[in-house]
Length: 413
Ligand code: HAM
Image 1 (cartoon, rainbow, N blue to C red):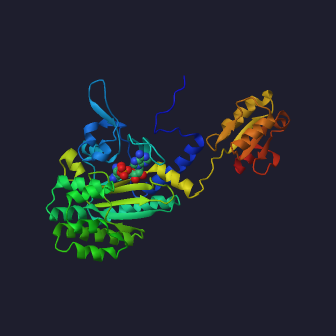
Image 2: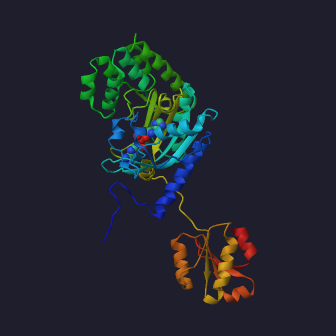
Image 3: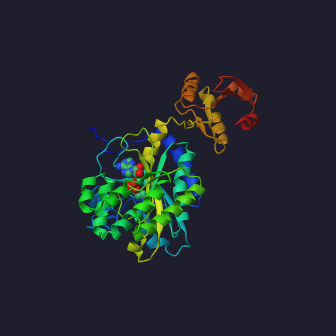
């Protein structure tokens, strides 16, 4: 019987995992340099957690099931709601800011295609507590610096939902309808949005894109609309901090984001060459979500990378990832020195990566194996050399070899 993996899932083979791990480590270490600590959330949650504010887009794509006790659960489709729940349950007494990050798979029942999977990985951060514009800017800076740490070229766009929502509020549009408009814009369904908002000025605002000069035009456009103007003031401050941090960005007030919990700054990062699924990062401020789970008024801001898309982009942009290398292969030339070879391997382990022949191969075959796994050196253990207290060290790059004592090998390695 042949059983295949479920649609939208993947197997990751060792070579691929090596590259993924290296890139993940670079991103995590950048994030940790800003003071973030790693957390892990459950793979499944009560499904109502995502019903409150995550938005229809997410809810339609959830894997929902019942456990044996009849509880409705789901595989996590994203982490922000879980982190807010965790904060309310476990971290509310912690000193703020609470800075956490995660790296784990998410599950969404979407139509699989290039860059879109049903099981995909996110690396994300959540900054809980601060409200000031410098915290929005710092979160964006972390995303940009993480991508720079792996040498990726990308385009970062910043918007502000407070400006759009503020204008709708000023135009007398209620919160429920606002959500519908934002979701329509996020999906590119302009017609649907135009049925909900009649004022042209709103769509002129959505179309505002470009560098900082856009701000002047926006100011004129929303003159007299107090809620929207207030959000614009905050947006301007965020941009000033981004300039201070030397983050490259462009403005796009049409960024709506598919999730319903965003309240202020929103941003997205795209890369060229990935086709339709070219968004590698999305995030923003969500000041009311923690309140929903805890009753506490705690603002927060964060983002998540689509890690699989980052890996695709690394490949697309031809960024070289250092190859995996084993430092040492220990090759006994015959069975009589096998025990000695195992002893030598044990002696070097802990200091470097060591493989010893386990297949009972002839020397020639062991050397072939050593070059296939990209070993740096092979120690050839033979009875004649052993009698002199020596072994043969072969440099697998140059092919040169010499008789040598153990202490000397230690120095070379
Ligand atoms: P999101 O935009 O839904 O935001 O997802 C973040 C990233 O995950 C996307 O930009 C994309 O790169 C990747 N992604 C989403 N769906 C898939 C998929 N089916 N296959 C592969 N990659 C995918 C969130 O999830 C928010 N929780 C982000 C956030 C954190 N906002 C504040 N804090």
